[in-house]
Amino acid sequence: MKLRKVTAASAAVFALALTATACGGDDGNDSGSSSSGGGEKIKIGIKYDQPGLGLKTPDGYTGFDVDVATYVAKELGYEPDQIEWIETKSADRENALARGDVKLIAATYSITDERKEKVDFAGPYLLAHQDLLVQKDADITEATDLNDKKLCSVTGSTSAQNVKNDFAPDAQLTNRGGYSECLSALQNGQVDALTTDDSILAGYAAQDAYKGKFKLAGLKLSNENYGIGVKKGDTETVNKVNEALEKMVSDGAWQKAVDDNFGPADYKNERAPKVGQIVK
Ligand code: GLU
Image (tube, rainbow, N blue to C red; front, side, top):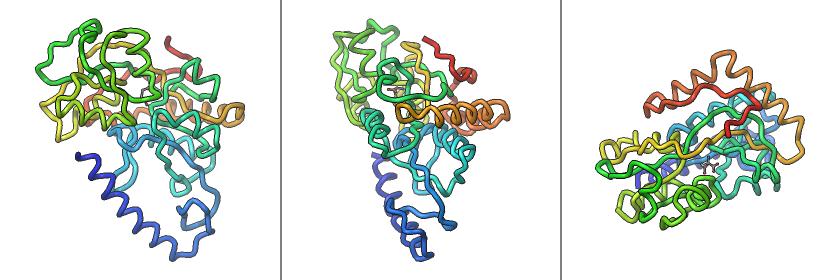
């Protein structure tokens, strides 16, 4: 799997980078990461395996969520080298915030009433829609076509929940830990479709390894309002992040992040949402 190789390679590179900076005499931060100037760190949760949104590569971390989080962190007073990126898989997000493992989560994290019982959200900062990634020649044109099909999604995601509760209750649904695992299952024919947000699927479809093999079905099966997750009750941080997101849109940095990250996958995103306005 291409993505697995990337992860392994990047782990080696990062180990080297850590050794190099440790020689510089850092402030002994317990996390193992260090910044040359010392100072406080901010831990931010992202995805590691979603090209265009949150991806760990040998050269660092890339994607729209990474750019949004980097901008927000700067507004909160943290330079990029004071950010420690932590992988937060779909099913871990609420717990990671509750435990204090991370201060913020920017990981294709949809704002939902159920999640709001456990965490707070700033935003939204992107509106995506659930869709399907299928083989190029697949004949799936509407949600009801899915009821006799094998689907793959991810534990703890709205995508998996929507299939069961909403548009294909009779489909055979397999849930994995991350979407890159579903991508392998789709590639080797174990499942007929991978379902999650169109933003994520477009990033996979544009990978060199998959070009010409898969297509998005183009069904807008849900509204996914991406928010920045914050620990329940931390209203001060929510307010600061909301201000940062508004500024990011008004000064053009949001659009630049869209162009840089969604341009290569030709993902046609919705306009910038207004902070505080959820599209149901
Ligand atoms: N945005 C959806 C969610 O928060 C699906 C993508 C994901 O699992 O991160 O569940």
